Image (cartoon, rainbow, N blue to C red; front, side, top):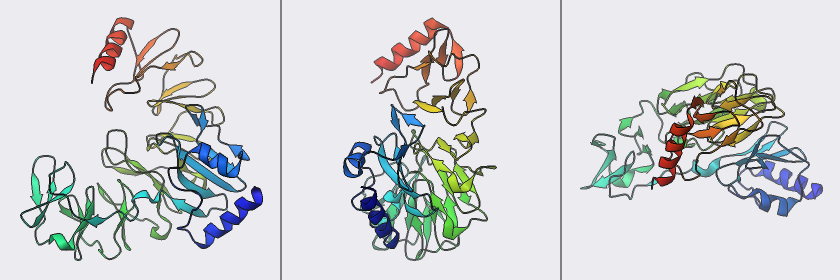
Length: 334
């Protein structure tokens, strides 16, 4: 098996677009069926399954929402074999004739963007000369983020990387503008760039720095992150490198790397502590802590959990009657 995997790896290095017999979105069970049991697995798990399988010097990273679908193939030799290519070549000729929030559409022979408060006309843009995906678009002479022209962007080299990032030969673009001082040749996105509420969000890196695009449209440099080993865990919130865990672009305080695990709905824990996003829940009992948010809860609903002593709404302790009322509302909402 290892010899077959090594042959496959060497073939991939010669043709980065060919990841056969693996495909993005393939499940862990299917990977194990093809290659057998992995040489090692990550300590970080979701729903009991490791987020990373390792074969020889290849790491296969899985998205816990896919379910456990393959989204990144990584070589320990610091060669990126393939990065979340799902949206890399996604700009397609415009065909939509109905307004959909935050997307382009056709009307009366012209191109419009359906914004939050009004539909905006893209002046001077012909439908036959326009392609788009979500809120990214381009013609032969201009590139667009929604109804806004991206000044100086080069249509010939412009490509969408995911929901949160796009780039051309001169710059990386986000919903909050250009990212300054990026090493373009080494820039790569590390997840699909969209959070639970549908907003653009996610991790990226180049050879010098790690970036986090939050759901509000701001991009920050994660100071102190170890670039070579930095990985997103696929949900756009959590990430890790060889020394630290990161949540929402910040280091998770005091987190013990070897015992840390995701519990779901922004909760996680290690051998000693419980966390909500990037904050420790002081006084929470690690062993009895249980996430109680219903699987089908609304995307923007508060999160509920409990331990042997307390009831939690997000990371705050609340009284049991109020907690039960919140739970009742969640289970009754359509």
